[in-house]
Image 1 (cartoon, rainbow, N blue to C red):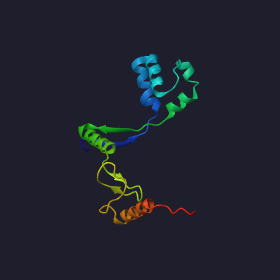
Image 2: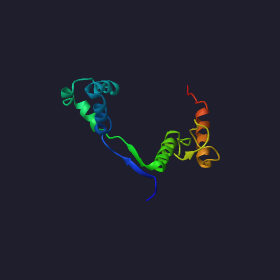
Image 3: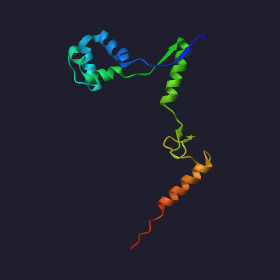
Image 4: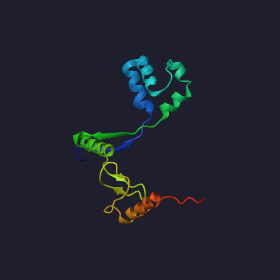
Length: 134
């Protein structure tokens, strides 16, 4: 068995990932502050049990990536960094991945020549003045 293992995303509910750890750390007072942060009106726990919005929030699923060992942790951090700072965009016309500067929205002549020609033709059409019929 390898030293580090990276497990796929787990899907626990919000109540397990957020509510109970906060409740154990700070009791009911910590929950009240947390409720304000997530946009739910603070109330005693007895009243919260009847609140449908609170029940729906606790039933939401959240993704958690699990890693075992140092090697697995390093892989998890690398994947997180790559997902967060993805330097490759995708073309608005064809959806293909494109490299280049950060704000690039369409394929260039080196990315996908056919898509580039279509984009240029579209820009040309839009730049032409519209004929006004009087």
